[in-house]
Every structure is written in structure tokens, then in C-alpha cells.
Image (tube, rainbow, N blue to C red; front, top):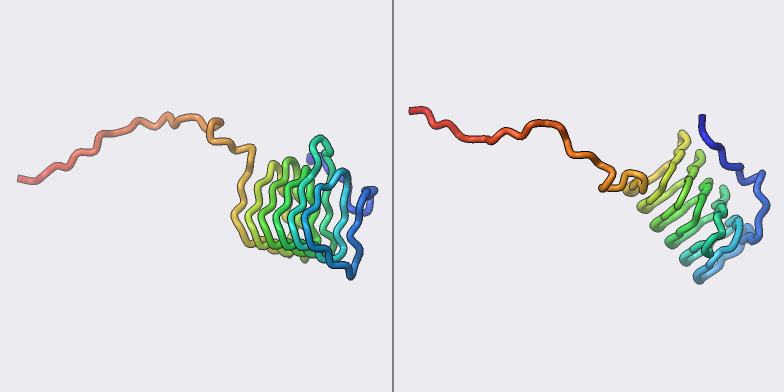
Length: 141
């Protein structure tokens, strides 16, 4: 039914921010990245990378991110833009707006922000076939 993306245990990672680490700054990732520690800054993906960013159970991202795919089991505070699919696992916490193509929010995940589906482009909406009536006010005599 769904085109399942691999879970974080099935991915191989080109970069990893280890548990107990704290990184300050911005990152342009090329390949799959896993955050187990605390990252403060923005994360973007290199062009044509088409990879997955994983915020692990104990991982924290404070900043904005733009990646092709995202798996969240930890905490994110910032605006999220995902070109393909985002999966939000049980226990995850997101404070921020999410722009996505496909989203899967599991039970017991918490999301506080505006969800915007990029597939629902305004130009894709068809005008309604409802007949517009001219509203006039009738005054009783």
C-alpha cells in the first residue's frame, strides 16, 4: 500500500553526530545523516543527494532543516522542509512548521506546528461547479 522507506536501522550513514555531543553551526549534508546528540543550527542537503536525515530517540535539533527524507524519533525545534517523506515515530516531539510531500505520524508522537502538504499546490485546485447566487436584500413593505 505504501512505498516504505528503510528504517534508521536499515540505513548506512555517511555522517553521525554522536550521543552526548553538542554541535553548533550549520551543516550541508551529502548522504544519510544520523543525529544522536544535540545539533544547534540549520541542516540542509546537498543538491542531488536524495538522502535521509534521522533524528534518533535521544537526538535534538534546534534549527531549521531541509532534506529529502526525514525520520524523527527525538526532538526538533524549528521549521522542517521535506521534499519527499517524513516519518514521526512514537515519543518524538516537534515544535515548528512542517512542509512535506508525504507524512506519517505514529501514535504518541507530538507535533506542534502548521502542516503544509506541497502536493496540494493552489494551481491544482479546480473551481467549484456551484452556481453563485446574487444575494439581494428584500425589504418588507
